[in-house]
Length: 596
Image 1 (cartoon, rainbow, N blue to C red):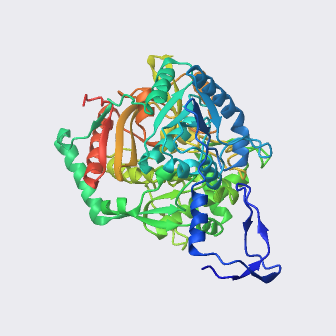
Image 2: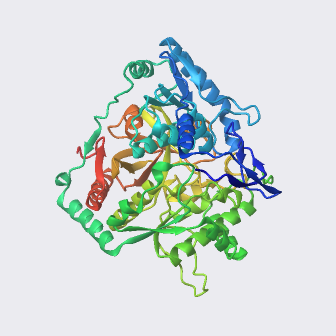
Image 3: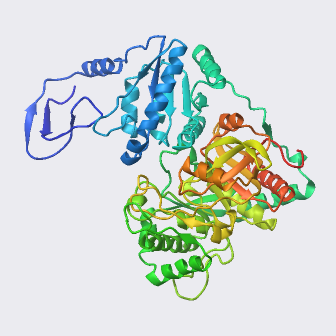
């Protein structure tokens, strides 16, 4: 039986998400108390009683709705109105099908939003949800998937993820990350998107989900890659590069793994070590410490290097809302520190988490990241003062938000593009939004690919002279920092994404053309999304809007330029071959210019 004599320390901690009072050791005073004996049988009975306290069943004509949000209060408050508007439209669509919406968590008048804003809160919300209920996860904003993944893992009823087709906030980005995380988890789900939730595509598929619990989308654009279809020279180069990586190995530095709840972006060592890729686990604290060792004159020299190349800084005077030179100099110290740490550990690529924690310590890392990914960049000398330039004449690939799907990809891209004499500058982009555009010889759906801060300058029209730094939005980055913004130059690109499905690494890869839109249309699209961020106008080859949304297993995709259509096609084939030989299951999406 349980001991009768227990020492109790008085003191209490109340959890804002639990109904019960939690007791903690807090030795203000203590005493010995006598408790009645409790047999093992009684203890088991109590435990079984608590475990069997199931939430009430949801009626057949109700759908439960949850909304995952950001961890940052300012972002949740700013974006709440858009979320509420979307939920009203979703409720109207469900009502038209004879269903009511039961929201599983209420609006918080103190926080001034109604999002699930932490993992603990999400777990508590799901404890109160009928596990067999039809469940909708509705997103109009960027959200942290881990807030709801724990509850979704155990949910038994049909799950529908959906987002509004809008660029105002990164709701589509949040949807794709959640979908990718559920895919990695092996959890079945259906997914939908709509501009106003009245279109036939949405309504017909919603009806199908309500009736059957699942939706099947058109994925006819996806084809398993066959090495036998690759021309001999391209196949041999891809196989050679994979063999060299396996033999020589590559170290990838990661500054604090895991970012913003992106469960899909964490790859276990066991998945990448057999390919020759090994993690060097670094700390953002070490990065800040190294920044403090960088001299002011070094940061000033890097700043002048950018000024000499006509790079534009959009400066103001209000540290809280505008970009200042002090913020930029801090970012350039981070750039120099990152290069030196990468050299210390022999890294072939690095990733900076850059969100929670670092954003409260220093200016955003975006400017540093864009510089790292470019071949031409401010020189960084070894800290020993021997005059040796580190990574001279080469890009140091950086994978934003420590997304390992990007990390693996950028190492492969760097080796393939370098071997083929192409510009190895690569970047990820968020799949932010898009619309059909007609004019200027274009009659196609044009995507807005827009990463949250920086791209290599060689991707932009005019290079450094056509690029600019604008302040990161204060609701995301309270300590400021500049972006590396520009409009991506017209040209031929390869896009790709490495992801986990069925406990195996897969890669989708395809071709696209970056098009030039009129200045007023570019401005409209920037103002419809996040103005300080870089933008790419992309037309995918042989992949429709709905096909990409249905298939893509990430919020990000990687891009790199060819010199022309022929070189981009060839680079895709070499890259696909290298990935396949590394053990990644490759899928060709859409079509190539050469007709494959």
